[in-house]
Image (cartoon, rainbow, N blue to C red; front, side):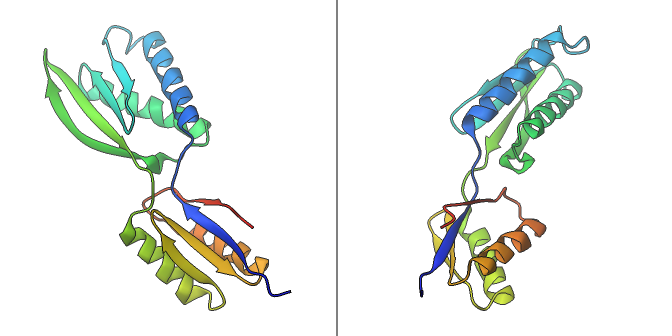
Length: 163
């Protein structure tokens, strides 16, 4: 039996879980004593989250709440790319948080090179914003997954289409 097995390495997140985490964040902001009168808004766009609040102190508190709620919903904190803090009207601050999705070519090349160096019987190939890994032995693929989980890449990695 000379069939090959494969899986894809992708960087993605569950959008509905993010919506739920943001909903919980806004509810906690409205109920917390130190944030109640700050008129803080957290808005979800297609690829960004916009936070508008009183000061950098309250912005920091919103970050903490958002990260806690996201972590409880099994969302990686690596999906958040914090932009610079801008001054908004009325002595307020605004920050745009970009949502990272997909593996860039540069990181895909790093992952591919790492797999080629560590595992001789495994063939990685870059396909758009994902990396497909194939081998004749399922155990080799399992070893690749375990080894990649130990590495620290700047994007959240998921392993899909395992067949």
